[in-house]
Length: 198
Image (cartoon, rainbow, N blue to C red):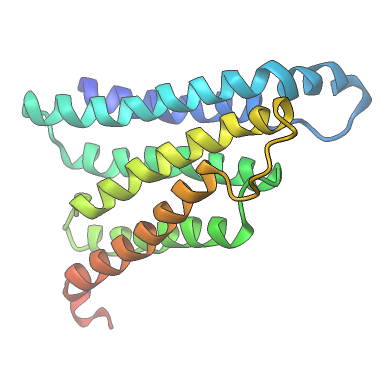
């Protein structure tokens, strides 16, 4: 297995670690101490893990292209790893009341739709790499999620902060618009690959 694919697998392995530090467990008495840690220091740990995991996405792609290590397995694994990381963060932020359920639905719905489409065309022997708009969407989603994670503590530390529409909300709005646009462009460009399956 080449290095880019190992980095993608590392990103997948970091997802449950990220979830451990951002999501309090159910309100069980024996978990009270850990939940207090999650709600204090854990948020920062989760934010750092998310950023580090996201960086592996950019690093593995760069290495794969520079060293000519692009493989069909990598084209399949890399977007799966990305979607798992983003989905875990979207679920956690929605659970914590930091992200609109509508935004979560759009982001997760788009990813499920595109993943399903990829699987269908993969059955025809075609592997589709991400397009440029999809990559820009990923960057905005990553930045928005990172900002929203750290805003959890920001809002607690600065309770006087008057704005209800935070910088994280604004960046996420752009990310959601790009999510819709990139999904539309992706399907429009590749819809003909379904052929006679329609």
